[in-house]
Image (tube, rainbow, N blue to C red):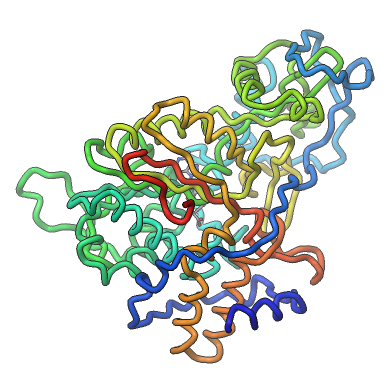
Length: 493
Ligand SMILES: C[S@@+](CC[C@H](N)C(=O)[O-])C[C@H]1O[C@@H](n2cnc3c(N)ncnc32)[C@H](O)[C@@H]1O
């Protein structure tokens, strides 16, 4: 009943602005929602997968030729081509700008877009994520866990189902990659806390590069430091939400191996640095970031083959010639390929599975890199470090990278976020929560529900006017990588 009412509502109303969700109230329900949610109904949604329009300038080819239609990969060895000057203002010389200038000068030439992206996001001193809380209405962008508690709760349902398929092991590593504020994990643990045998099996591992966000996660998981370290075991925190131990790491490789493992990567892959290639008259050239004489950054094309070309060749082998032929730009993400291999190796040896949810395509991604500051798209090269950089995730590449690792691994999806949440029971959950809340909470729940499952652009943004749908249900995709021993994970059957 409720879902139908909500469907009617969303088709006429587009006023779900970010400010509506400034305060996120946790609503608890005494009903064992998880059992109710284990009804694997299918949800309908239209799947549209065209990439977002480009925010990256097109660099003209040196000779001004038409791009060839050949799909062969050859490399432009001509001198650097300098495109026309940018129109943007000379930049404010932040510490990160000085640092990037220094790298380019020291190298004696431009750096890859991937290196630029990595420095901008995760430079240990000046990176976008390192010293700030960038999430929510007051920050730069909003993510599904910040939209509604139901997101983390339903991811918890997925983890619980997988744990059951794993044979309910007594000890499990539950790993989250890039946990942001820790909201997803907090909602997962709070929601699952009634399932004692599940939560008692868990050791939570948060893989986070930002010291500021690590502290926030510690706070939001309501962690207490363990007093007794007399047994020589490393000091760890206990989340009072479900009595689970929690540890922090900078890398997945630092999470102890040897235990069955469940890995969650929500909006983590989209922050991994990509190399961008552009088709020129003599073949594919890597796009690089250089400094102009007026000290602004600009894009140039690499004069010679770059190491990342090997990854481009690998990515093109996984695609059909027709898929490559129509593209003038291609993004490749070696870090995503390497991370997927690490995940697949871990799952192959220790058992378990991984859930990847992100905005993306089930195929080659063209030029999706974009910058968002205070909920608005901005120029990628302007005031680096003050805006988030992200890209569409290439889910097909994740699949191929995982499948290459081991025959023990199976990959499922991607399906849309709307299908994923619908099949794991978000409709039942929202109904249960609506039984016991104030009018204000009910409005917030309905808004959150539609943001999670409705149609819209990605990354999530307010849109220039009220006509733009802003749901995350169709552009955000879910994929599972599991050890075949576990069978097909819910809800990918
Ligand atoms: C887009 S945010 C997503 C946050 C959270 N998953 C959510 O959905 O709200 C990316 C997160 O990954 C972290 N991160 C980005 N690159 C990282 C890296 N190379 N290693 C570890 N953490 C990283 C950021 O600090 C941040 O917590």
